[in-house]
Length: 345
Ligand code: TLP
Image 1 (cartoon, protein in one colour):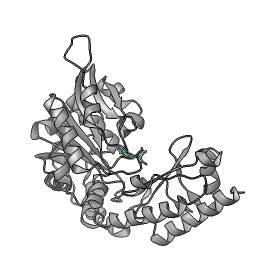
Image 2: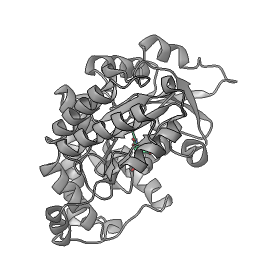
Image 3: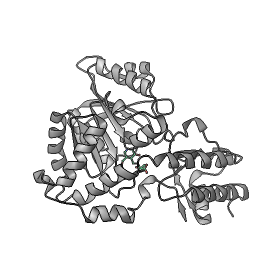
Image 4: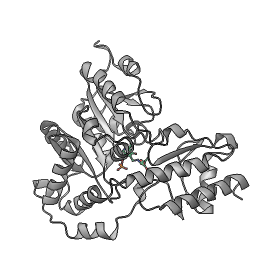
């Protein structure tokens, strides 16, 4: 079975497991885990922020940042397909009592004017717009990368209006490998960022949030409230440090694999891929032209040996990652061609 459902599926390699087993640990709730501290310092430095905090997941990272930036009743602007809106189980409403104001972007990227118009005027009967969330790469937009100049100008619109800006950088590493920009050059425009270690980088668990010293102190408080104070978490942080040392530059291979896959599968009659979005490791395939629902196609592909996920009623998603080789991806594309052209029966 070739599994392209997500880059979250990667399993720690023997070398990563060795690094985990050898990790020096302490109690991180006391701030005394040397490996967690090393990871936090390293990520803060990479992202150009004063401080960083190790958290259990990308969802926890985003939700902690929303909680720390907002007060109950505030409004948060996010792209209509943003992970914070689409896949975090209404966490912003549940945990922070804020509402998300959706703005539609183009391939995940906002137009400055749309954001400007979404910011509420200062009238007592309106919600207070407090935060803008950006996502890079954008998952539901097919892994599209935010161009740095557009990113900077959108963030400026928000800051000029007194908003804070948060970056869901679950796949910021992919965005940087694809665009040649550094993580710090994106993060210079935001007040907080969440990056994941457990997606393309191949660590089993963990994300890191970063921001100013005061912001991270406050977020640490909420992390404890959310039940995310971990003890000898250095075992997990060691996997993250290993991933940063060994698995960032190789993301370029995943991107090349995704492009090769999309080129073949996009040639199937009835399947449409917006090739302009195929900039990193995600491929969204619109199957509406086949007259058969995406869920049914996902089942037929799985029966033939390729797992892809259903992104909507009409779309499938394939994600390349470090546990699938160029050969696996080639085979997967061929199987999909066979399934779609034969009806998969
Ligand atoms: N995304 C998962 C699913 O939830 C869809 C995936 O398979 O891609 N931000 C972005 C942009 C993400 O894509 C994800 C995970 C997260 C945050 C949340 O990370 P976790 O799963 O660690 O909570």
